[in-house]
Image 1: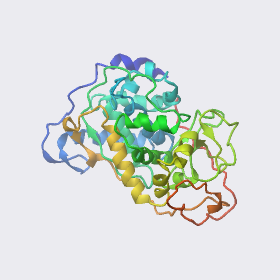
Image 2: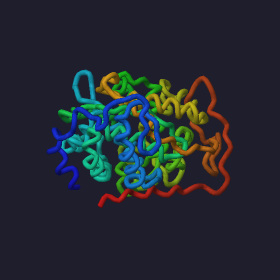
Image 3: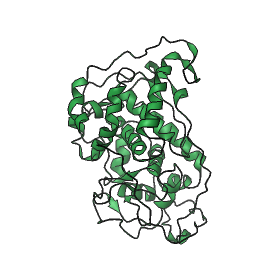
Amino acid sequence: MAFKKGFSALVFAFPTVLGLVSPQKRAVCSDGTTVANAQCCNLVQVRDDLINNLFTNECGDAAHGALRLIFHDAIGIDPVAGGGGADGSIATFNATELTFPANQGIDDVLDTEGPFILKWADVLTPGDFIQFAGAVSLSMCPGAPQVKFVMGRPAPVAASPPNLVPNPFDPVTMILNRFGSVNISPQEVIALLASHSVAGADDVDPTIPGTPFDISPSTFDTQIFIDVQLRGTLFPGDGPNQGEVQSPVQGTLRLQSDHDLARDSRTACFWQTLATNQQQMQSQFADAVFKLSLLGQNQNDLVDCSEIIPAAPAFTGTPTFPPALTSADIEQACASSTFPDLPTEPGPPLVVPPIPQADDS
């Protein structure tokens, strides 16, 4: 973990004024991309390096980790406790922030992503890099939206205060209040959880790292909103563990927070609407994650480089229940409408394989 040992010494080495190319209108970058601001052309090489050498052109563990990192960095801000929000402090001040219990497992993400943060330090500050890598990671996952990215965040000046990242065992009211303190609504919280469609757990049950949250962890689809609404019947490993409740399909792990938010009267109906509406899920997530990326920042001071972010492959599937499960297995939570009666995927009951782990050597 050499990255984490040496990174904090570079806190003041990052540029506060970015842009290796003078701004001008409608520039053409080296790959043929046309951008409104020529500064954005500096990101082409960074983007291609991430796609080919960090994510290796797949929606795998490294891409999942990059998406997770944008949340763990950005939520580190509070109107009372302070913090810089989406400023990269989780990388620069990792010796402090990785001690926070809710950041368990982020050390592995930083070991994988950290060398790239250092490599491109003359182009992007840590805060910009984390948000850029997260946006690019989504382009690896079929069905993901093309999210906005802006650059120009100053280098972080201090670690985030502790206890700002929600835990999977926190009560729903605590989670909603935490997000509400930074003006993120309950509906936006649920939209952000679409990220769990391409995610897995490494440390909730450390005996089974890489356990996905739904049956299709390489696809950014609505399956997470279906699977979590199904009645849990088993633990995939040696559970129950703190923050884990029973899941409906062998090989998947269900977070207590996901389970509770899907069944809480304040969020259950919106959760249900996303179960069968891919376009709405994409749109709501894209808006919410961009709002998250601006926490602690002034958008007017940032340069819009969204044109550099590639589009993800299209998702062509349809919502279904996992094999052997039906609407009878749904735990109805929305009081105003019934969960959709979906077709059941054919075949025997699934055993979902773990997500292969990124090489952190």
